[in-house]
Amino acid sequence: MSLSWQKIINLDRRIIYVLISLAVIIPLMKPLFIKVNITPEVQAVYDTIESLPPGSAVFLALDFDPAAKPELYPMAEALLRHAFRKDLKVIGMTFWVTGAGLGEKVFSDIAKECGKEYGKDYLYLGWKVGDYALVIGMGEEGISKTFPKDHYGNSTGDMAILQNVATLKDISYLIELAAGDTIGTWYYFGRLKYNFKMGGGCTGVIAAGWYNLLKIDWINGFLGGLRGAAEYETLINKKGTATGGMDAQSVTHMLIITLIVLSNIIFFVTRRNK
Amino acid sequence: MGIFFAVQYYIPHPVTDKMLTDLAVWFRIISAFALGLGIVSLFHVHFVKIKRRGPAWGFSIIIFVSLFGMLAAGIFCNGIEVSTEAGKLTIYGWLYQNIQVPLQSTMFSILAFYIASAAFKAFRAKTKEATLLLMAGLVVMFGRVPLGELIWESIGQFKIFGINLPPSLGDITGWIMKVPNMAAQGGISLGICLGSIAMALKIIFGIERSYLGGGKQ
Image (cartoon, rainbow over all chains, first blue to last red; front, side):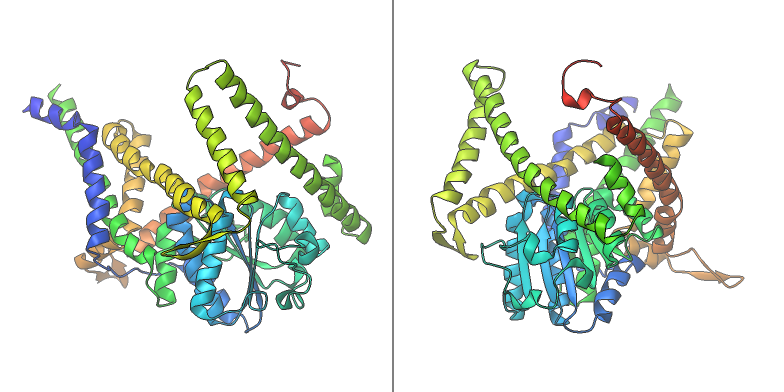
């Protein structure tokens, strides 16, 4: 008996890898589409965008790279869809040079889908060296002075979108999608000085730390990990990769829980036998 | 400079705002040079490694191929576009979307396999603290996915003295995240802030100089 317990506890890790692979692949191929309940944090971001009058300016900071794409890219898609539906003006940029291409893709794809015009309805500034100095520059000097050229090399000075949104002071809502700690940069050098509302989205790994930001009023709501993205897709009634991915995440979580419980049962049984 | 950045927050005035703007411009210029310096440093480290046939020097060649390949695609291809299933992409864009994005996503995804394996092999309720962590982790893992919520809802609820029992899974995970988690995170954040202030003061007043390189001061 003890020997068979030992066999399970010393299970070849490659078997675990195969189980995880199956737990991800099968639900992706045969989605269950289990209902996703909405949490108050996600509802708050949705309600804020919903409450903005048409023509208001939303700033989307896409501070992530391809490693966080599965979680944060669907958030960017859902948020952009919502903002464009509400006829909001959206300006985007990134602090992560390796994420500049993802930002370009999400803006161009969703704008095309929603029939929005570049330079009038939305603007993608891309990446530029400077970190927090860019936030100060956009707040004090102006967006077009800090970014004289956009991601594509076009001059921003005469773009229609920037005629009414000269600086960060004219932003109604800033949404930070972060895979790291860039939210501090937007808060200390942006929100504290220019008083715009802030919300966000982050990877599941750092979501636990963001509840504190809600409490201290840095942000009014946030989308945590793939779950947050799936909730937002549910709210805007447009299922995307996050909703599909939730089934895979559900099954994977259940598998990991089973493995942990099983290993602990074996641990207690073998300890008692000793 | 450090003192100015700290003090200007407490003196909101056009003069301090102007100084902050000027400093921000300087910072952007210095950052651009720092980026160039970083590339030179990277080049130097890996060039020396290849020259001396150091450990894993083959990877240094891959760094050069990637670095110069992307540079060449960006500079010399002059925006030439290639047709793909996803529409037209520049050669730089194609390399980015088809090499960098899948590579980085794969690297991060591999974590799921290691976490599952490590959890099975090492996550044991050996002490009271470990048991507490284990229980909280299991509840949050179970409650943060729709399948867990569906299973929990299937148990049903009943009322005792006007209170719904068992509480919804969302309420339980929400309480864990918003009460004990937030308290712990708050404590950690406060500690980090105090440590950062102490370190910043040491750097500003020249007590801590190891970041400039060299040995112990």
